[in-house]
Image 1 (cartoon, rainbow, N blue to C red):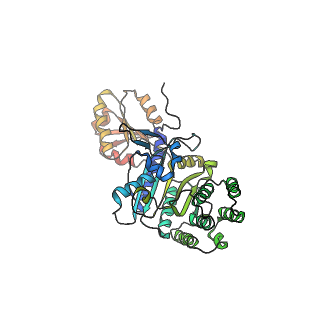
Image 2: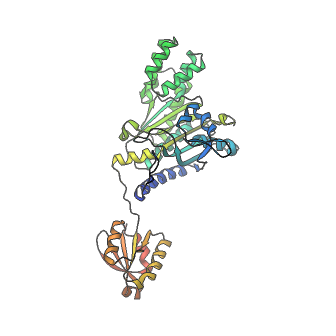
Image 3: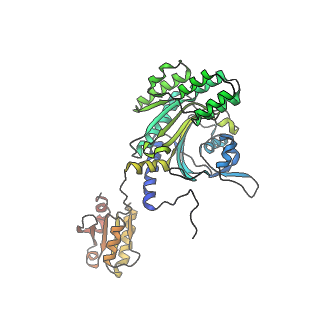
Length: 418
């Protein structure tokens, strides 16, 4: 028997109904905020991702040579593809350009809880502005998208890469050493960072200052101990605007660092504590990625939400939404009623009712049992006596109550069952 590949999953109808609910709720938030959906290829030239993330990402990619001997890869993320699309075709569009996407991504890593080799993301990119208003708009979008799913317990952490980056660059002239420091801060590997400072005979006082700032977490007032700068002013303004959006519970976290050069300013993450160690459900920030792909330098702010992790967090909170795949199940009482049953189910579907009909030629008892197991709100029994009056018998599957309903009123009555 052939099994599914390791690190992938199959989703049944009930699970997919919940995933689609979550996805649609977040889509609606994006649309209401003026973001338009884009779709990019599932595979791209490998260079697109190595330019963005460095050569190390090759080990995590599903890479291959196509029949034209070109190096291709299944996308490990979608931001690079969206910016490539912008550089190729959308750079002359009015700014800011507000785009969102939903899709699957692939990474060759060790599967574990919350980590899969195929995973799904919803993300957004706001291209063409670097103002605090832009950053606040994107943070608010991410928060409202996650709120819309029904997830109750999550934390929003916001930082600014410029605070630590400017400090490191001012004290360490070697660009390679600066990049190494930022990578270690990104991984929160302070032991390795201390070893590096010792090996390169860098000032221990600088190490202490860096680690102190990286551990600063709390309200905006926590930055009062820092020297006033463009970065701290930018963060304060973001938080002021977020309060106008009604988002009051964000926290400062100056330990959020990205180890890649194109990240330029605000960075933020959202965690769901219910997930334990793999609690991050979203990551985002400001960057200038278009230049890497041959375009003009353009500021962008974006994020990606892990749909899989949001679904896991919702399940961990125990918030299960009712799943009712069927409004009505149509049962012909006898074989000579089948044609009437097909007309009725077709009419119900045309009026927006989720309806099914007996296709197995079961007897009445088995059909009612099937309607119950399928989660139908009601069974519609098509009998010869009722059809003579252009009526049917409607059975409420939750209460067992039955009543005769005119065929012309059927869709309205079924919709009113709630």
